[in-house]
Image (cartoon, one colour):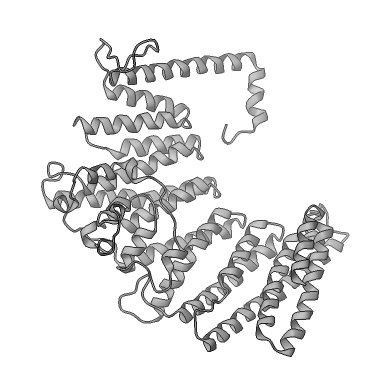
Length: 511
């Protein structure tokens, strides 16, 4: 069970009274499961008997879908993990809407999933149902008929209410991350909510971009309307720029794909049946570029606070790596003095790469240095360091003089990294030799393999730069760096003998 050691959980079975109570609960659960499946078969007119012909209708009157909703709620509050229970619940909700008995009310679903997540914060099916509930609410504001919203004012009020619900989901994520700051389910849901806020209010008629170049049915004008609430970031970043690709390629570098299928929230079926969104929707104000910038920078600061709280937070580092190109793009526009500040406005490749190097240095000095000196044996910041080194490397799609300037800045950053990592290894060696240090961790000190790996990565990158220059002084410096890189690998073979063959291969490749 979540939050409880397996030994503690199993020890309860040794107590006869506790074992009896658990057996009784299991019997009750099985009885409820049988009742739920039986009621569902009756509702859709199929015989519960396996000996009867499939599709044979029963004589008993069908039960109310509300009964099945009640049963699923009762079972899910006990055990939120079974995905088939959530499937049945969604089936009943959609069935009630289909027969016109009720409209979709998101609050009971949010309340139920919140209760279930408190019981098990890492239940996949529960998080998915919460995503589905929010996405269904937003997408069907757009395709509701005039009976649901008799006036434009009513529709706008409903849209505003739905938007407020989505915004409060960020607060819920913050609360859950206080309980478990590395819960990747919650981090994934947070990215989903940000995608919804970015896509919010956007409809096909506002941005008929791809219809002019579409070659298949999937790329017609409705493509944005279908995908706006699946959790993908590409849609709202694309629409924000009013073009298929930004000059800096933000969409390709910051892409976060869909988390739910469009068909699961019923949007595709509505369009396939000939529904025309333009007949039911008038244009609704979306978030401005300034508001979207504020949203992105708010998420950026959120990852900063979580990383500073715990340098082992891999989910926060991952999210930060996805935000990096968007933040760089927004900063460039802000520094240009444009009156209409927003993500994705035009910038030359050289300016974009220069801004990227500036951001990489900030990440190194403000985040990574503190992390690796505090916990040098923690692999999480070292993974991010490897990402930053690769991400900041200049590309050749600029003029020669521009590339030389960018390469010099990149070399300066790598040199500073190398100096700091050499200092870190010296400090750790001194600590390792200090006989007064009690409870010494064998993964630290001279055996801190991650520092050697990090230094080897930086030295290898510097060597490539020196060889690229093709002059005598650079070649001599490359030889010195190569010798130091080999020393790192020799140390790693001693520290980490299980991976000695890998280090030998790296040494051979450097020759």
